[in-house]
Length: 119
Image (cartoon, rainbow, N blue to C red; front, side, top):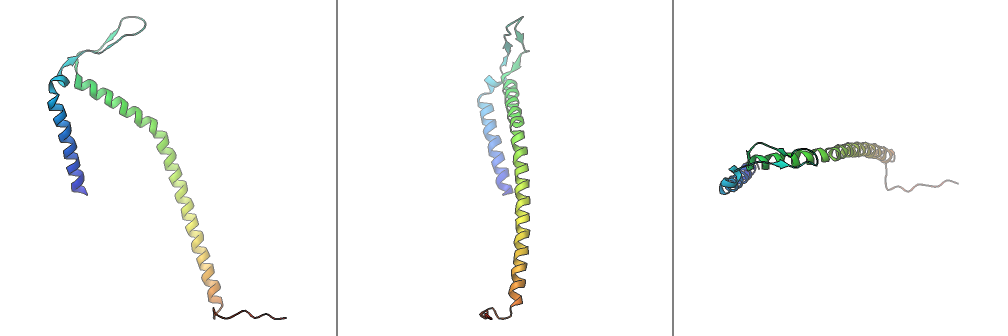
């Protein structure tokens, strides 16, 4: 499995390298980002390669998704903890019931014997 992961990462990095080198001219071309605000002068960034803009916007989206899903992960961890505690307590109860059943069965020496009624 470890070798499979290494091969998978090499393939992924290879695809990224192919995409980068086949679009090298576009990704290294410098652009200025302009944000028009409703008031005042428009905001201009310094001239940066398109690859930097792609990286910044990708990381912004990744971090946004990470922080939005953070509360859901905390809730699911709490649910898993509660379910594991319930399963443990149920297993302990099952073990106690088995011991009680064994003690009741060992109390009667002949399990095929019919109970006799006395009047």
